[in-house]
Length: 158
Image: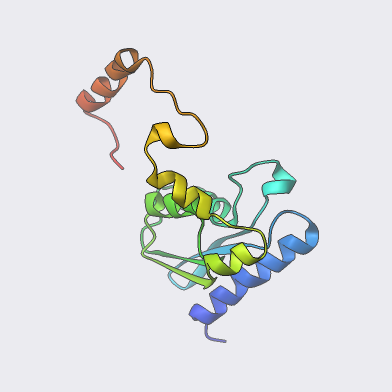
């Protein structure tokens, strides 16, 4: 059987259902593929791990990076059962896979109670207009650490 985009996306959908049926979290699954082989897969584990960051994409990215011993997913493809939420989107961009395939979109997710529009709306607001107060303080105390990083010769940029 040839493993193509349909094969890998179907696996992500299967993981979404498996995780949901086991009570591990919401109906989301993700697969990371490199050179035509699955190197990591995950389902949503938010409720079972008591971790709001344990979305399928984030868990799969963590597993894939550990397997590759790298903090980026160069030459990898991510398959996910649903369009990534804003948090997962950020993680995907930091991980830098070469492509992402998804089955359902954010409107489909919103219809079953996973509406991320409020996060998109909050990101667009100025800090002082957001629902959760963000307080900027102690900049002068924090700045030397950034300055030290800027001068660091053996740093690993990302």
